[in-house]
Image 1 (cartoon, rainbow, N blue to C red):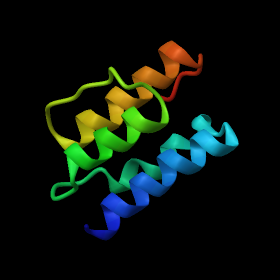
Image 2: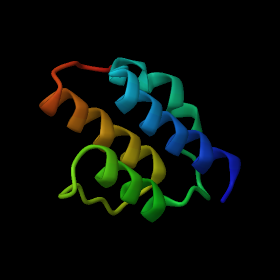
Image 3: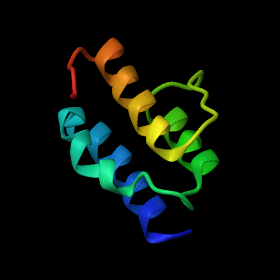
Image 4: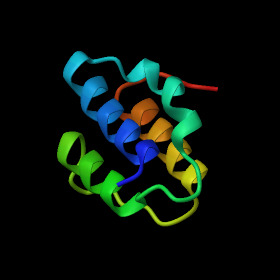
Length: 78
């Protein structure tokens, strides 16, 4: 698992534990080619929503997570 994937997974778990989803923008830089998208989706499902699915590019995954946070938690990240 590469360092970017580890950082994203850590961030998802940390944001959930501390209710700090508004800090997601700090992790945008890690959504690059080569991340383990299925593993990140699996962690997101475990931490937030077991029905969350995703197929696409890394940056699209970032925006899908931001959209989920906005819809479910109620904040908007530009």
